Image (tube, rainbow, N blue to C red; front, side, top):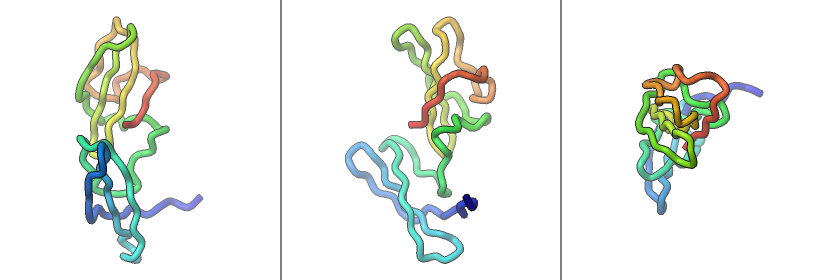
Length: 109
């Protein structure tokens, strides 16, 4: 599969609880793409955004920590999105996602 060229953010709007980010391809200038994030999140400057199946970039910073169902949920943020990692309640959330032990669950918001 060829690598997808990055496209520049050109517009954004809000639809309910989602922010719709619109991008224009830099090479042709005619192709537009959209990407949705939570209304409280910023649109990534470039598209494609981070792959939600890959987990957070190591440099993503801790945004918040919460307890749920006997586990600790660490939320990490970077310009390309937000991710939640679930770790044992007995552990503290590391300040950067790259410090989380491999094998912990990650989901992009």
